[in-house]
Image (cartoon, rainbow, N blue to C red; front, side, top):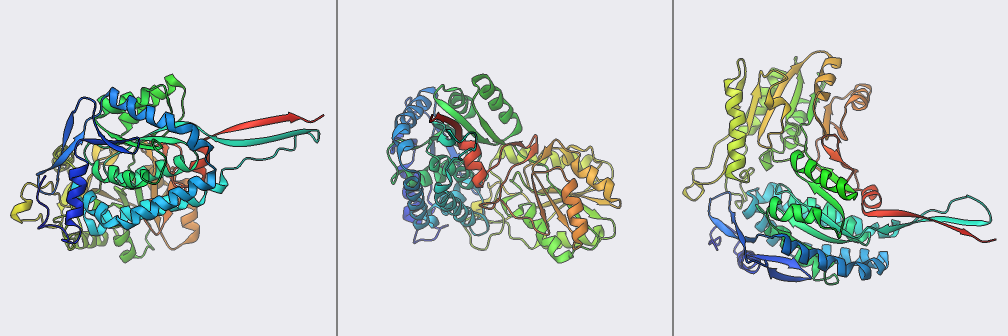
Length: 503
């Protein structure tokens, strides 16, 4: 275990160290921290320093079977628990997380490299907000009476599905976990979470706090590779539903497996989101919106990142100049430092992938690649996975940088003059997750919103996922919605129709 005392608030340093110590090589199964059946582990690195943070459990099919068995055994009793009581327990769990939020945020910063001030504390707070929202929606798990015949009582009921498999990525693990487990649990399902092997500890710790207040086996967390753990979980015959956030390639494999088993899935698979700036837009707000929308403080590691920005030709020169100046002022540094705006990318593999795209941009005729800001020079950060926010201009529309999800701090900026043309370019993508429009003309905004082929469209703002706003994409960005009552009812319950002849 590395020494973090010199980098972290001394008031919480012992508690943070305890998390890594207690969770070494441990899954959460049946409300207990247990080692893998074979004792296998995976190294988890601190992307800010290159040091080993700890050892995560490396689950195999045997560990998956144990976790699913725990969830399946707990399901009948949890499903029979009144919905409002389930909601109260989830609300209580949210309060338990809030009481330990500083510790969880620090663990998250250490394992993901995200800045604690600009990213990690907000992620924990949003996860708590999501849990609280779903806890309050427990009374909405109700059916309908149907006017079929006066002599026949006809109604519908909402029933839980069974064991839900929730598979998480590493970029926003706590929010994405809560978007899956909170509605699933409130609806009466039990859950097996597969945490990311690259950032598992904050996930397991948050779930552990919740599980202490829930019946044994209702919430379980395992960790391992997609090959050894994820596949076994999706294929397990007792899993009744899969909810996944991650890459398109893995999502396709999960969808194929679920189709063979004929079980429901919800998939959030990524995006290449456009941002369209009209000539009447407020430049100061647009610059702030571009920085927020590209998720630069998260190193661009976001599926909703506004990675294609189309700026009207009358503004593009000023836009690029002002964006460069604003990005240069952001502090890249130790994720645990309160002065840091931007931390690291998650892994050496991810950094190499991003750099390969930038190298391609630099080789493209007419393109310009501008890296903004300063890489930290502190000796303890010399092996960290730091990248500068980067603006790329002058690309052809068919460039891989314009069409593929880079998942890094790289934004492509393009000019436009004709509205029909820019809408067509914005929609010319395999993805359809998010989009933003920047104008003060209401008619223009509504016209653009109607024509954009994306599931989450905003005007004059670029917010991340918000509780109670239905979130999900079109095309290859996935299937289903999250963050709303709709998500709980449509994706974590099954509707039964009951017909009773009273004659």
